[in-house]
Length: 330
Image 1: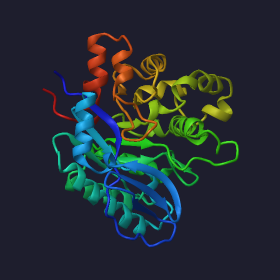
Image 2: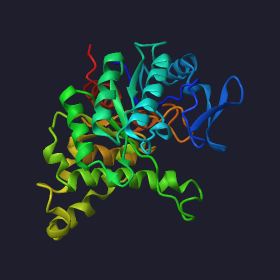
Image 3: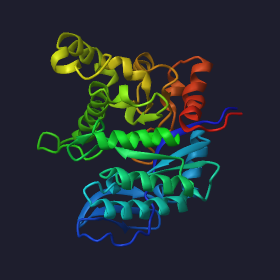
Image 4: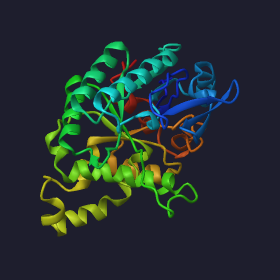
C-alpha cells in the first residue's frame, strides 16, 4: 500500500514563555486533554490535546488511514507585527517547541517551521536554521500587513526557498473584520477563501510567477480558496482590460494554476473536481486541517468518496505529496 500523506495539519506546542506583551498568545490549560489559546484576556480558540500530544495525533491518524502528516504552525503565532528581531525570537521559540512534538514520531510527523516574514534577512536566516534542525518546509501567512505575496521582499524569500529546495505552504490569516463578517463564522467561510484568492491573483497579475522559478514548490490551503472557481472571471478581465489588469503578467491568471499545489479541504467531490480541472491532477494534495473543528474527519474522506480511478486516487493521497515534499518513493 502506498503511504497516505496529509499535508495540512496544525500544532500548538505547550510550555512557551511569556512573549513580552499583554496581548500576546498564551495557553490556558483547562484539563489534561483540553486548553484554550488566549490573546491577553480574550479567548481565541479552544483546543484539545491533539494539538500537542503525539500519541493522540497518531491514534487519530491510524483511525483515518493516514501514514504521515505535515505538521504546520498555527497562524495566530506568526507575529508579523513584531520587530524583525523579536519576530525571529518568537518564531524560534515555537519552531523548537514544535520539534519536541514531531520528534516523538519522526517517521510519521513532518515538521514545517514559521519565519518572521516581515523581514527577508531574518526570515531566510530562521528558515536555514530550522532546516538544519530537522524542519522539512515552511508555512507562511498570505500577507504581511498590507503587503501581499508579490511584495519584493516576500518574493525574495520565496526565491530563497526555491534555491534551497524548501516547500512553502501558504495559509490565510488575519482576515478583515466587520459587523457583516462577525456573524456565523463568516470570517472563516468567506474571508479565508477570499484572502487566498487575493494572494494567488497578486502573484499571477504582478508577474511574480514570471520572475520566480518553476522549481518553487508552493502550496495553498483550503483548495486555494476561491481562486479555482473564479479564474474565468479573472481571465476575462485580463483579456478585456490589459491596461488595468494584465499589464504586469505575461499570461492570464489561469495559466499559473499549474504552478501551485492546493490541498483537498473543500468538503465536496464536485469542488474537488473543479480543483483537478483547473490546477491539474498532479497538483492536488490531501489536506485535512486537523485537528481543528472545521477540518475534515476522517481525513481524505472527500478524495476517497469522489469516484476517482485508482491511479488518480493514489496521486491525491500519496504521489503528489511525495513530490511536493521531496519524500523518497518506494
